[in-house]
Length: 308
Image (cartoon, rainbow, N blue to C red):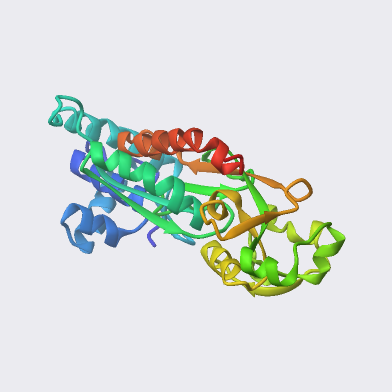
């Protein structure tokens, strides 16, 4: 890498170069930006170098997950967003309103992706067909390097820098058993009685989210049965009589063959948080998806808490 520049070249930054920075800043990758803009990797690199020469400093720095904006890069990105907004203001949709387009990339847990984010994304896409939403289903803490992501949804209050954390709302975990399983093995009548049953839940050694490490607090004597990093596996293993599952109520209550046990004694309340960067939230398509997610959370409030 050449040494950092300290003096601008005196040449005004090119609008095209700024829009290239916008694409790289959002995706964190030259290759993705090149595909989005219809350019090659060499052109992207050359445009970024030209922009850095004109502003007199680095606008991007290599991070663990891709390219991250520097402070100077964030200033340049704000200017690029003004250019993008001006161009987009010329486009209208069929109803005469502002047409939205672009790709919104979201990381969220499995259950949230399926039952909250996907319907919200579909709602936005029906209104704005040129908006595409990419959902990455994963259960992990919020990352400090958000290259390639516009929105993250995590369980538990995140500790993040240079990002905005929005509290979406609560959901509840409960203990469930399949009707046939409970008919054969009996229904637990107390917390102490749980030691007779195997537990279906996350793989303890691979669990990355502290707030989800709750099983040991009420059932330390339960032995593990089928465990997985995917909550849909928890649901299906419980339905298949692998044991008692600790499941999100909004997922388990959809199945008539699952029965909640000890509801008055085991009700684990957790919170979904949304994390996004200020520059991402300024994009109309990202703001529209975030708004739709918040609306969906309000609509599903009672379902999420196991009240329906």
